[in-house]
Length: 160
Image 1 (tube, rainbow, N blue to C red):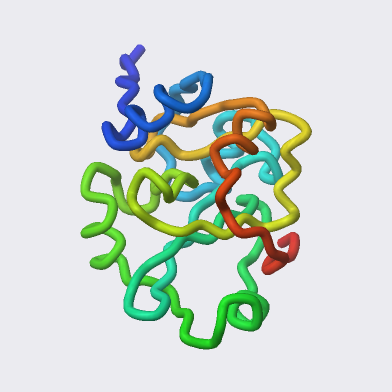
Image 2: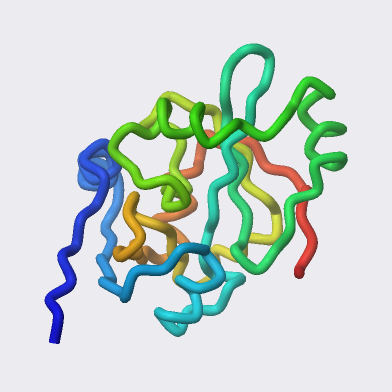
């Protein structure tokens, strides 16, 4: 049995340790949020995924359930039309302590504004990537609400 090493991005861990209570769930390495949800037996609606956006010369993060698809047109109508997806190179520069594709759904600790999709149901547990492809973070909905208290809210996704 191969030992799974749990690593959470240091920037994220420091921020979470100061803000909320959470658990770490190790899992076999996965390369997409949908696969992570399956590997951890977590409903896709409860796994918060992050999409990094370029906006007005800066960056921000949209957070939506892994089981949902981002609607750029809806996001643009809420945030203004100069919104685009950030490139992998830009994301790597913003999240230097995270693996590409395992960006945590917490933007504040990386200096980003955040908009959270209304479809994230914070009544139960919320899960998110921990910065690598083998660690999931679990917290209850109240803790997630505390983490995203300053975030904008909007509706910009639909269920896949």
